Length: 577
Ligand code: HEC
Image 1 (cartoon, protein in one colour):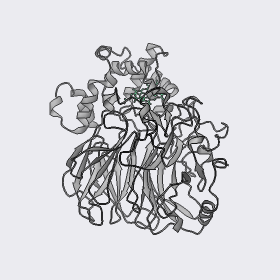
Image 2 (cartoon, rainbow, N blue to C red):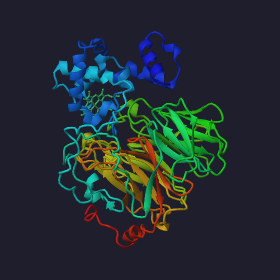
Image 3 (cartoon, rainbow, N blue to C red):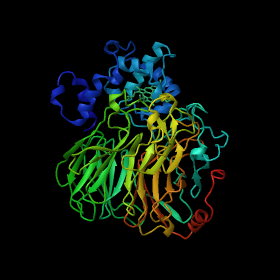
């Protein structure tokens, strides 16, 4: 499924639609017919500057000025902002893109560009189309954009933090009382400027831990999961492959790697079934379906073709789908994020069965909504091995200012409602849905752990390995992919959520692995997946530097962290001092 097929598909789309049956192509077709519901007339509008080199270079300048801070270098996408170099945009006619950028999607964080002249908008469309399958320039540091994270900004308000104050071993706690009013600050557009990792930059872990590079040269490495026999599975979402790694060399690298399966449609979640030491199947969450492959312990290749288990809603928006099984193997949980930022599901059919954790039987039947109002839990769900409870990691909504709405990590209640889109963090009404659903006000659950708003919290895992100091046992590690909707970046780190050996969070969390943002605000790494390897070290996938990091405990230095944590829980006041 390389660029050739995509290219061919685009050219001959109108002629031979029926011939193509791959999921990628059918997705292209579905979106091609109605790019953001563009009116038919827009499709007929021709780009007056098509094929002109001068228009391309003018478009490139305009893109750098107006679009790059959100959509990333070469249209790669960033945070919750969709890529422009692939997907629906590249399949849509110029006229429809022109129409869309003129109008914007203001409620969802995409400004209207009607203020730019028509000529400029067409030039931008030309440039955007030229980004097809472009790869971000990784070889040189990009010039900082006009909205690069200001390093001279005032320190964040108490309880909140940003990349300048994130440091391994530092605790944070955000409570409901700390939340500002909506629109207290403007809604920032500050996506990361991805640069190559400078040779002197390396992830930073607490004292006593060391960090090695486990695997490099990957293509969009996302979710990670450890098989019962210790093999490490990785979803490479944009290449559509599941990779597997085995063993460890003396310098911390995988000894062996292979491709377990390929040809998947934006795969993310990975789960072994049945639970226990002898799984027979590997389940994968595609953007539009759950599939499974036959599996025998120790095999590095799928034991047969993919079997279709269930269809998932997928029209637009958040695309990652995570999967977990209940410990008794009777329930399959699938997390599906919203199609939009805050569209009202009452009037938006695309939001049906989204912003939910869905429950199925392992054969894909009997779907029901297990928990709802969870804007995007697609980045990570996990079962606490100690209590058997389901937990999730959630991207909350954008557009309400720097310090709203906190992302969160929480245990999930069967039938629980977590607020989206009408309410947030309990009984706070979203100002964009004023007066709606008063009956849900008291039902909206306050999550267990409030994270820095806009962190983009992704995969979570419970530490049950044989290596880290005893006080880490049972704690949660979570990858924070990093913000775009915050004037000074936050996230871009791995955090630890202490559960105090009780399986219960107390609201605080600790910076664990930082250093992915340079002092000037440019970003070289973005944690996505996190899993505990068989030897007890922590593996972290990073789709900024396209590698996997390995954090292992090598000394006694973490005692300090343990004491600090045990003796005096930090208050919101000293959270970032
Ligand atoms: C403040 C951040 C921001 C800026 C600046 C921005 N965008 Fe967007 N853009 C978004 C978001 C968020 C979305 C998703 C909106 C949605 O889902 O409705 C989006 C969506 C889009 C889409 C549709 C993508 C798809 O796959 O559906 C296009 C095309 C687009 N933007 C082009 C542009 C262009 C061109 C510029 C510069 C002139 C630009 N954007 C500037 C945030 C931004």
